[in-house]
Structure formats: structure tokens, C-alpha cells
Image 1 (cartoon, rainbow, N blue to C red):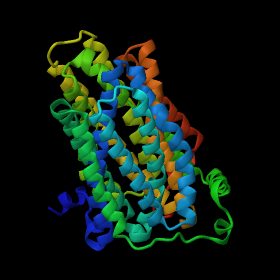
Image 2 (cartoon, rainbow, N blue to C red; image 1 turned 60 degrees about the vertical axis):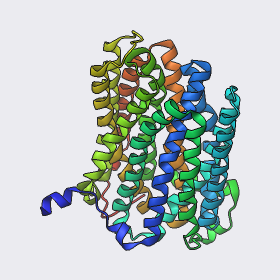
Image 3 (cartoon, rainbow, N blue to C red; image 1 turned 45 degrees about the horizontal axis):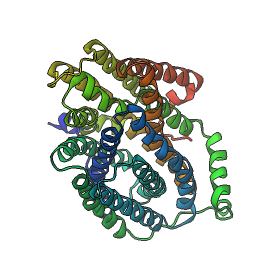
Image 4 (cartoon, rainbow, N blue to C red; image 1 turned 180 degrees about the vertical axis):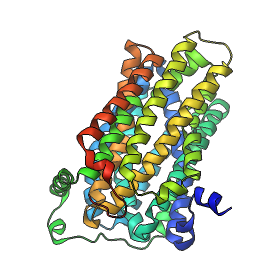
Amino acid sequence: MARARRLLLDTTPLRVSSDFRRLWGGLALAHIGSQLTILAIGLQVYRITRSTFNVGLVGLFALVPLLVMGLYGGALADTRDRRRVAMTASFVMWCCTLALVAQAVAGASNVIVLYVLVAIQSGAMAVNSPARGAIIPRIMPAELLPAANALTQVTHTIALTAGPLLGGILVASFGFAATYTVDAFTFTAALYALWRLPPIPPLTSEKTAALRGWRAVADGFRFLATAPNLRMTFLVDMAAMIFAFPRVLFPAIAALVIGGGDTTVGTLTAALAVGSAIATLLSGPVSRSRRHGRIIGGAVAAWGMSIAVFGVVIVLAGSTSPPTIMWGTMATACLALACAGAADAVSAVLRGTILQVAAPDDMRGRLQGVFIVVVAGGPRFGDMVLGTGATALTEGWIAVIGGLACVVAVAALMRLQPQFARYDARHPTP
């Protein structure tokens, strides 16, 4: 029994910190709503244009605000009250969701409206996330950060599991307006959790206090240039997300290969989260591990191989536009995606822990800004890469090529930065 408990997710952070408990619960609900909106926007763009390329353009309109505001938002988190920064950005995101509801009710058929709202919401999220990420080490002891990150990953995986499934059902049964409305209601939980936090000003050094705006951003990059372990957490994730993030392929695969339409899109997206959820629920050994760099490298390579296998399944199935769901193909594809999700969960927990523990407090906001650019911007850029590649090849072949490219890139990075494999959580170094 004791051995079984050691395998399971460590819930100690929920018991020792009421602030973390509220933040965790509020973000769990908000993440579910966000996944509804991500799925619905992709489906709405595809329904209007019938083009995977246009779905991929959603990534372009989200990417630029992420790059700009993620970096600037990190600087704000290092020089302003982090609670206030997160609250303001969250309010802007909530207003964008209300605007999505309004355009759906009005029956808008111009994708530019969706692109603009995605851009504004993406910019606000890029400010919110660095501040929120820099808050966690201030309300949680360092030794509990791996467990806290695993719990946060649970909220993410629950959202990725329930959100797409619920989103597919809501869009198919009630339409886009109802789906966006659910997101608007769930997001209020995150606003409440942030409101209940005490003020959290950064522990600003004299150097940081003298810097503002883009000068602070530049100072953060100068620090990152001297921090090879922190830098590697970003590079390996970029390899996975740019080359092998398959989300943009799902609408066309559902229509042309597997069948089932919106429900299939939700199921494929949820399969990634099912694997992530299983890995996170059994994350006890991961939370207690110390060779974080070596585990991260292996996990990202496993992600790439799983996506390549997913692509092989789609290639072998062929493009037949089936009238009903091809259940064998669906099951095999979901299994490959679940393996990818499990690998991603392990990588995410340990990358987040290295970033929080190895970075000094007066740099955490800016490095969290880089983190959100990579974590959220990488998939958006991947949407463009795979969406464009699918027009030249097919959805299946681009997944095969992207997955293998991810494995090659990670192997090259680990060879170029061998000290990352030697990273020891007992003696964290940036």
C-alpha cells in the first residue's frame, strides 16, 4: 500500500496552502473553458473557410501578441505587484470571451473578427501567465514545487480531456454561442482566485528596480544567455511544439480519414490529455526524481516518436471521406496520441520546476514570460508549420515527418548541451 501511494500524485500543496488551493481550483475551471474556446474557434474557422490553412492562420494571429506581450508581461511581473498584473490581464481575456459570444450570436461569418479577438486574448494571456507563474514559488515552499507543478499539470490535463470532448458536443448540439458562453462563466473562477490572493510584489533587486519596460526584457535575455539549463528547457519544448504538435491537423483528419466530424476532433484532442492525465496521476516518482534534465530529454523524444506513429496510422488509413467513424483507426490514433500526452506531462512538470527553482525571484517573471512564449507560442507556430505542410503533403505524412524531426532535434540539443543531462535537482543551477 505504501509503495502504491508513492506512485500517486502528491496532494500536499493543496493541504498546506489555501491560496494555492483556490488558485488551483479556479484555474482548473478556467482551463476547461479555454479549451472549449480553442476548439470552437478552430471549428468555426474551418466551417467558414473549409481550409486547414486558414485554421493554421489562427496560430499566426495569436503568435505575434504572444511573442511581444509575453516578454513585456514578464518584465511587468518583475517590477509590479504580480497579483494586480494577473488580475488586469485576466479581465481583458474575459472581455474577449464575451466578444466571442456576441459575434456568434450575431452570426458573424468573417474570419477576420475571430482572428482579431484571438490576437487580443492571446496578448492578455501572455501577460497573465508570467505573473501567475511567478506567484507560485512565493506561496509554496521550494521542496513542494514539483508536486505543485504536477497538480497544476492535472488541471491542464483535465481541461484537455474534458474541454475538447465537451466542446465538440456543445458545438454540435448547441452551436458556437453556447460554447463560448460556458467559457465566460468558468473564467470567473480564475478571477475570483486571483482576487483572494494577497498583494505579491516582486523581490526586486537594485538592478531590476532601475530597469523598466524593454530594458528589463533585454536584461532577462542577457541572464538567460548565461543560464544553459534554463535555456535548454525552452529549446527542447520548442522542438516538440514546432515540429510535432498535431492539433491543426485534426479537423481535416476527422473529415477525410476517420469520419465523425466535430466529435472526432474533440476525441483526438482529448486523447493527448488522457495520456497526460494518467502520467500525472502516477507522477509520485517524477516529483521525487533528481535527474530532471535526462528525464526531460527522453520524454520529449518519446513525444516525437508517438506523433510519428500517429502519422503512420493516418497514412495507412488513407483519405476516403468515410460516412461513419472508422473505429479501428480512431482507437489506434488515440493510443498513439495518449502516449504523446504522457510524455509531454513528464516534460512539463520537470521543465516548470527547473524554471521556478533555478531562477532567482527578480528574474522569474521575465523567464516565465519566455516560458509562455515557448509553451503557448510554440504550438501556434506549429499550427502554421503543420498546417502549411499539410497543403503540400497530407495530414498523415506531415505528422510522420514532424515527429521524426522532433526526435532528431532533441538528440542534437542534448549532444550540444551535455550538462543538461547531468542537472541535479538537489543542487539546482541555472
